[in-house]
Image (cartoon, rainbow, N blue to C red; front, top):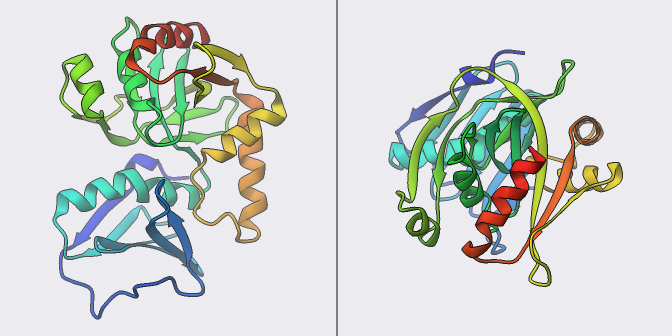
Length: 271
């Protein structure tokens, strides 16, 4: 497998020929955002994969190629951001890697991935943890994993850390931190932590059973098309292997930045 860092984005700034369809074609998968609105359409024809983001760009790549082409009339910065946050994780999944919707920090034992739905606080928690000695930011929104060796390893990807205004004010930091890519090569994946908001409890960490871990990991996995056969079985097997080989924890907590110190302490004990 070619190094994931070598995947490149070639932006074609000319508008696509003809108007893009306003609705999904029969062969397309539809991805929705947290508000139930269409975020993108995807399809696979032979070895070619297509991801169409209405009003922004159509991204295309082929199996075995390290290049993703974006056909767009939008500005480059918006297209590159969409590529990093949405398209690259899907492209890596089609290449046989496991990719989690997570932020992550690199610590003494390896990378700790923080999985959660958007808005739960994974970026805030990763940034707060990265301020502790021996900890550094590794990822925001996507953590790519390779389980082909004796250890499951996290692979460095380009990213920007996006903090919500309240979190940025709490830390006295810029809302968008141009973090680039994690320095160095791959690192062991030390743990996966699933973050859950729970107003009925204070900070509570629990290691999940194998069955719980698989379900939790799959819920936060980037999957280009989970319904396609034989990719569905292959995807399930790979995430089952990941959840069996890496400790998976659940971390429950109340909403609010006042919980942050206790959350960071709990994560330091896990990682």
